[in-house]
Every structure is written in C-alpha cells, then in structure tokens.
Image (cartoon, rainbow, N blue to C red; front, side, top):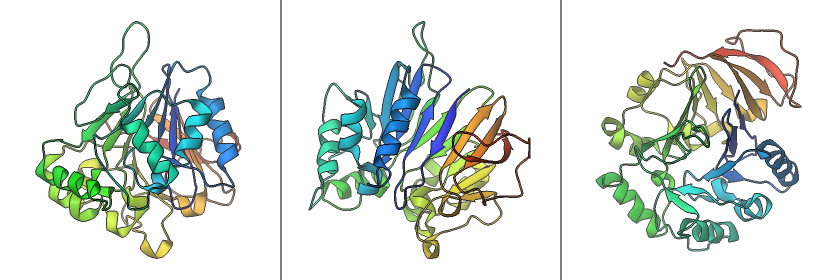
Length: 298
C-alpha cells in the first residue's frame, strides 16, 4: 500500500508518495543543510525499484525549490512537472536557475493544468499502473491565472501560479496540495474550481492566515484532517472546527495507508491528538504512531 511523507524542514515544503503502483512522486523541495544528506538518502531508498519517478513543483518560490539542484544531482530528475510559466527573480538563486533549466527543457518538462492526462500520472497501461494524481487548477485561459503569470514573469511573487493537486486511489486516501495560494486569490477563483471531498488537506502557504482556504471550499472538502505547516505560530491559522496536526509541533509526518484508513506517525514522541483511532500499532519508520484516520472522502 502507498506511503506519503511530509518533511518538517522549517519554512519550506517537501513531500513524497511511494505509490502502490510502480511510481514514486516528489512534491516540492526544501533541503536544509542539516538534513539534506538524510533526506536525500531516504528519497533514494524509498524510490528504489520504482520504474517511474516524477518531481512536481507547485510553484518556484525558494522555500519550495531549495536544494533542487542537489536533488537532481542525487536522483536525476527526468520527469519535471510544473505550470507553464516565465517566472523571473531579481536575484536568482542557483536553485531557481536550475528550476528554470528544468522548466524550459523540452524533454524533461511536462506542463500541468486542470484536467491534464499523462501516462502514468493518471493513466494506466499494461506496463504500469496509475499514480492517482490529478490537477484541479490552473485553468490556463483564466484571466486571474494569466494575471498571476504576468506578475511572476515581472519578478513578483509566484505564489498564485501554484497548482492544486489531488492524490486519490481506490480504497485509499484522498489528499490535496495547494502550494502557496493566497486567500484573496482563492476567493477570486473559488467558483471556477470544483473541489472534492478530501481526507487530508495540506494547508496552503504553510498554514498562514494569508493562505486560509475560503469557507466554501472547506465546506466542499470537509477534510478529515488539516495539516498546518511550519510558518511562525503568530502567522498560522489553526482551522478551528477541523481536526488538525501542526507540523511545527509534531515534526515529520508519515501516512502509512491501508484499506480505507491511514496509520499516522510523527517525529515527536510526545505529540498526540484525540481524534484518531488507536489501533495499538508499533512505532516504525523511525517515527511514533499517534493513531489511525478512517478514509471517508468518497
């Protein structure tokens, strides 16, 4: 069964999915120097034996592409997924330059948009099963998105060119990533995006109040769990009324999926929540079992 991991790396995002099919997916990259070696080793170990490895960039801010060049050196990224853009920076880092080289590589880049299809991202054949990944946004012709693209091309923040990415498999979880979309932008596009029910929402913009998901979308999602990121606590929205895990407090999070459930492990042995079922599982993966979440987003 698939496993999904969210790394606790301070002000940044990085996830991987070790799919039940012959796929391995990395979403965003942020490699703090003190953890770079161990994370790269884990990525190499977990992806070993998987025939299709892809990297998905939600958007090219440094805290989502930090260490990209080092990651590419380590695993050789051949499938680079991003929204088509011409983002620039006044003072580009080496990682941003590397992002641009992958973004503009006709052989490695695949440009994602609402409803796009691709082997084996969301299509199966006799060689390999689907990864269960679908893009819900952007609509590339949408005027609000095109305005965000123009801002990014002019060297302004690329937050609002972020994609909305759904992961969903039969008898397994439904999860949603939204990059660093900002609240005011989400409110502009709210009526243009059909949001499904989800088991786990990774709160956009690291859980900041400035990235608070609009109420209408939250009601449509009805998330079983919201993962609140690692922005400074004074900037966080804790999604009152919803079950939350706060990565500032718990450390790394691993979701070990089973039929219609997810066993959740975290890095901090003292962390706990009261909304998960206790199935008495042993600690593993170098992390601590805190409970099991039933998958109900169907």
